[in-house]
Image 1: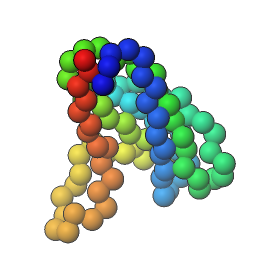
Image 2: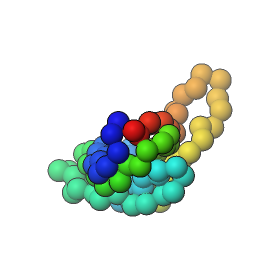
Image 3: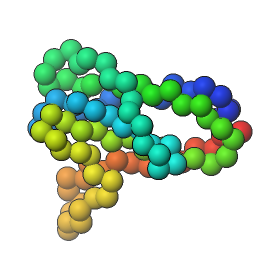
Length: 96
């Protein structure tokens, strides 16, 4: 991708409470995203994050926190079938 201003967008949801916070990490530096009010108590919550992309390799992640205080994990607990994995995924991008 090209260097410059990038608006990252996504949606967050929790099965246990409403989404109260979304954080975005660029190269492991976490910052709060802006949340848009969901249309209902159990609806997805849209978020946006403004990023000034600089040339190089970068790792992006996002994680949500809900009204019960549950935070999306950064590492998945191991189980035999791999069930229940809601880990914050890593995305690597190359900025030119």
